[in-house]
Length: 228
Image 1 (spheres, rainbow, N blue to C red):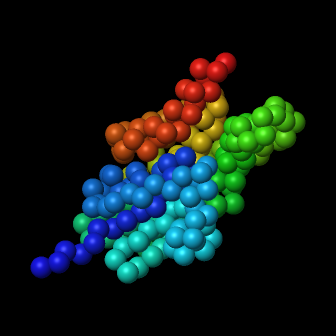
Image 2 (tube, helix red, strand yellow):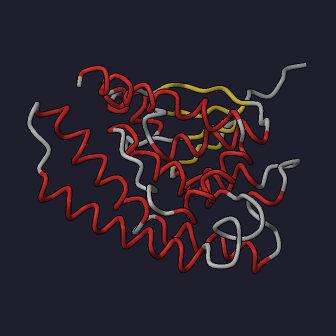
């Protein structure tokens, strides 16, 4: 009897949303196969990948005959698979709405503001061979600081995780994003004990999956340090 093909995910672990998907799959022990798509090599622009996702972005998930793009949708789809603990994406309407509230906010706040710091401090200098544009970087850091203020005041004011008493897909999206500037050696949570405690709680909740997902990013950091 033929077995159903395993779930397949197309990822580049230098991508923040891809790391969130990778961690969720590991934590939930969901059987899957990883197809690596190296963005730096343009593998997202091949005809084969473009057919899979015309937007040429990762992550992409293929579950049998069902293909899904966009990290938010993929995480929530995976979190509602049978046997997956419901704390990742609660079934109770109000608790689920809290996760949706953060993930909607994430894509116009945490994501662009943390990513901009990484782009200005790591990506553009690597691509052009030029120096960091300090004035632009200072502006990006100020925007990110305002976002971190809101994470503390809006989402962590009375609870250990962003959306309640247990880790959810919202925490994965947020922490993977806030780790991205670490490629330059920058800890954007430095001097913010409330957010540092939250980071420690999320890391403890996902255990070794966090380090597996971030190994590539932290290797970039170590290569940069070796050149200094």
